[in-house]
Image 1 (cartoon, rainbow, N blue to C red):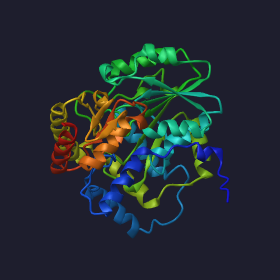
Image 2 (cartoon, rainbow, N blue to C red):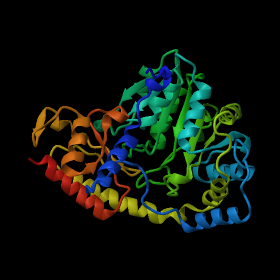
Image 3 (cartoon, rainbow, N blue to C red):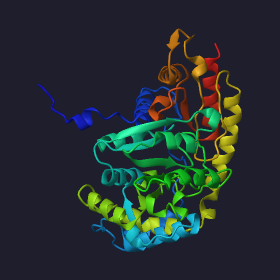
Length: 396
C-alpha cells in the first residue's frame, strides 16, 4: 500500500534535537541511566508570580477564543518590554502573539519568502531555520562561521552571500547553539552592509536576550535605518522557564504584522488565553525577578567550560549567553573508540549516548558538522557526572 505524502513533508528533516531527546527518553524507559544534555529547556519551575497570574485568569473565567494577534493588553505589554529592554518603539498594531517563537518565525518566513527566494543563515544556526525556509520553497544559504571567529558572521561574508534572490537574513544573538553574542559594533557593521539592499529583511531572533553573562544583547531594529527592515522575535520559553506555556511574539513593520496575523488566522488562530494573561505579568516584571536563574546558568557555564577544557580533543569557546556549549570535536574524526569508528559528529554523538549514556546533539543539525551541542540547562550534579562520563568515554 502506497503512502502518498506530499513532497513538502517527505523532504522535511526531523528536528534532531527532538529526535535525540526522544532516544534518551526511550533508553530511560528501559531503565538506563541517561543524562540528557540535548534539549534547550530550563530545569527551573515557572516563577510563582507568573503562575499566580495564570490562576487568577482561570478564576476570572478567561476561557474563550482569543484575538488572532493576541489580547490588546498583552500587545501593549510587549511594546513596553521592547521599549524598556531594547530601545525599540512598536505600537500594538506591529505586534503579533503566537504559539511559541517557532510559530512566530514560521509566520514571518511564510509571508515574506516566495519559491526561489534565498535566506541567509549564519552557521551554526538553530535547527528549525533551515527547515522553515525549505517549507517556504525557498533556498537556505549557509555562511560558515567557525570557532576561530567566535561563530559570528563578518560583514564581508554577508556581502559575498547576497544575491539578487536574497530576501531574508536570520540573526540569533545570543545564539543557539553557540552562546555567541553580537556586540553593538558588530551589529552596526552588518547593518552597514544591509542598508544598501532595501529589499532584504532581517529576522532577529532574541529569545535568549536575558540569559547573558558578558556584553550587551543589542537589537538590530534599534538602529533607525534598520527599523523598517527588521522583524524582532522573542518569547517566554527560555528566560521565564515557560517552555510548555507556548508563547512567542514579533515586533515588525505593520504590513508584515498584519500579514502574519492573516497567516496565523488560517492555521492556529489566537494563542492560549491563560498563557496570554500570565504573559502580561511576566513581561511587565523587572528582569531582576528572574535574575536568580541567570546567575545559576552563569555558574554552570563556568563549571562546564572548565570541564570541557579538560577533555582531550575538545576545542571549546566560552559562551557569552544562552545555555549551550558547542565544542569542535573534529579531532576524533577518523579515530576508533571502543571499537566504534568515528567519522563525523553524528557518530560521536551516538557513541556518547551508547557508551557514556549522555545525550548530546550532532552539529550537523546546526550546519556545523565538526561540532556537538551540549546544553547545561540541568543540575550541577548531572553536569558533573555527564562531563565525567564523556571524558572517560573518549579517553581510551
